[in-house]
Length: 136
Image (tube, rainbow, N blue to C red):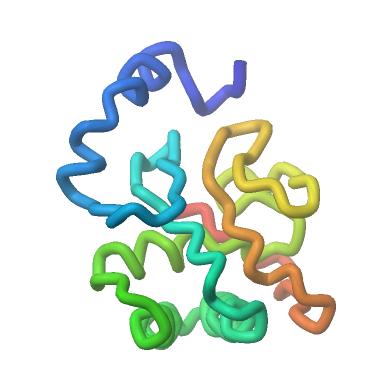
């Protein structure tokens, strides 16, 4: 069992009613993060170039601009856009929460089960050395 996902958290994760009271997926593809319980929209209809742009803003520690850009290209509210931006992978193929290596295109970290959106899977988006978001 992953070290961050205790049996108590697994049991609590089974009840996702509070997540759906806070976020409404409106019939869109989504995943609920087992670590923070945020509902993360997959937003696959957003072009890759725009997702890379948002990931670049996130990487450059421009969270507000990344959230604004995501809201401009989707119908996300402020809380939903913030949740999505916080789950964008920053360090290439590594988890934002625990820095464990991720397989290309995977959404869940095999070590801590945090959701990681692979929006920065562009070869020209190079992670900042030593940068990791441990607060997600």
